[in-house]
Length: 89
Image (cartoon, rainbow, N blue to C red; front, side, top):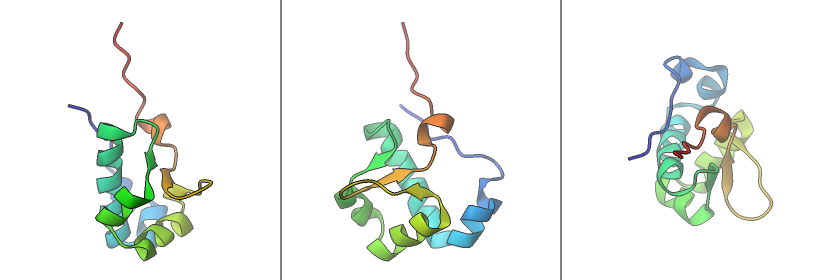
């Protein structure tokens, strides 16, 4: 089982407040999906649109919760900084 780390103050971060609850909920679900299936923090467009409509992802981009990518899909901002890959030797 993998985990998606959330800061205990994250719900009140200025980016989250700007984005709103709908965006934050979608972003959290996307982060959970990435922990299980995409350790780079990249969310394919088809997965993202199962979670929420395009307007939600646009607001996530505008608020800085996501970084733009070339082509379809989205990148969670600083995903690997806060969710490093666990390497067991």
